[in-house]
Length: 108
Image: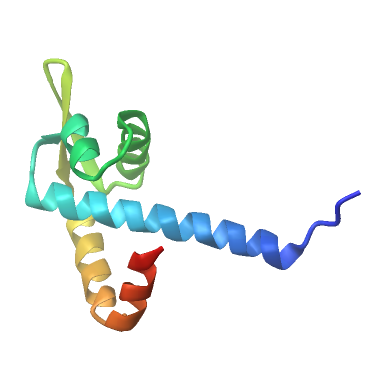
């Protein structure tokens, strides 16, 4: 029987949450730069699967970060005021992360 290593479990959860946060910030930044982008455009430019990108967008809508407008078959995405505020906070926090850490992360 395998014993659950609680620290390993927490590390896995924190890694997933960090990855999700990174994707959300990427989407916020892209949508701020490209208002009314479609999910397909966002997914393509951020190298994501359309389905996964759509799930992120749906969750971000539930958080009040984006609004979705239907335009024919396409869904157009825009940031809400809360979305812009979240992006500004993220950008302010990112300026305090040392460049060396970012370079190490990029090599993985």
